[in-house]
Length: 410
Ligand code: PMP
Image (tube, rainbow, N blue to C red; front, side, top):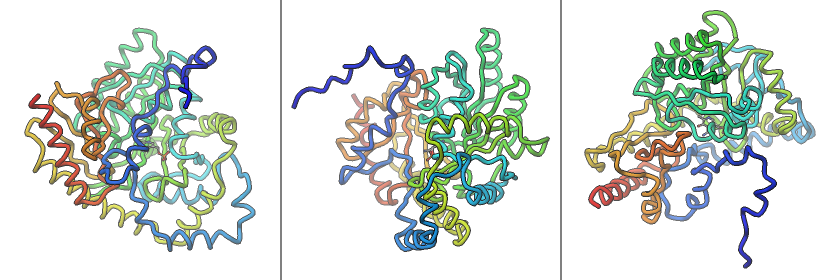
């Protein structure tokens, strides 16, 4: 086999490619599908829960509309799915109007389009530290500076966020938006408390910028009371303005349909529409029709409830196992929902360097480094609890604890 030269066309690639890197979770995909591996790595929902029969029913229900399902559709999405989105947002406590909804190919495309529409090279984005690695990837193509504001158990720390914004202003750096995952954040599992949501909105007003509220996990709450979204808080005080809300069907239905949405002010949606035309013309009609058929005819809320029951049990299995097996120097978050726990190892340990050893013992996780733009986070790991059964989670955590102990003793 000839050696493949991956750098062969380096002289032709756009400058933006330099800042782009492949996500660790994407790279881990091949490893994760290896038989016997216990994957605490991916952010995978358990799609087995949906079932073949329910899938067959949806396919049959839309069969009479096959010609439309196989056709191109409007860039902003079909009316029928926008109605479903309005219903889902209402169920999660955010009033929405159909005309403020724009369908995307997953929330991930929403992130890319927002960056495409707002960011010039050298602009800045204020993110939680740590933040969703896929957002950093989406933003990177537009070459912004990333400023992280630290978090604690109550979410992003507004005082720190304000200091960062002040510093950027003094340096003449234009921060275009604040990116936040307020509920059961990826990667930490932390939820931003209500007071801080208001403070963040206040900051956006003070510095005249947009807030991108990415909320894939809001409905995956196992305990505690739901909190108002930033979009809902803003609406209480006026109308749809500076909060750009991202939703997705990936976690309440299935990621395989690749459907999400943006809810925003009409001017922003217009720009996003133009951006999407250049990206993929429109999202899949087939997916949109499958989802609208299911959400209209089936009891989708019961399905979400069933998922939550299952994930809750798995979260408990993970928290119990962490408490039982981890050395006392290791700490972790206690999420009230979502898919992830964030573990913090002693600062001298490097979770990236430890990963091959864990994988050799058949356990995978995501090292913390990818969730920061500047290389921080080495002594953290993101642990997913939605994808594997409780007994495997327990075994996986036990092996991880063993691996960490080995390193501590070196
Ligand atoms: N935002 C966050 C915070 C996520 O965790 C994910 C998926 N893991 C996405 C966006 C992308 O989701 P989608 O499948 O809708 O593209």
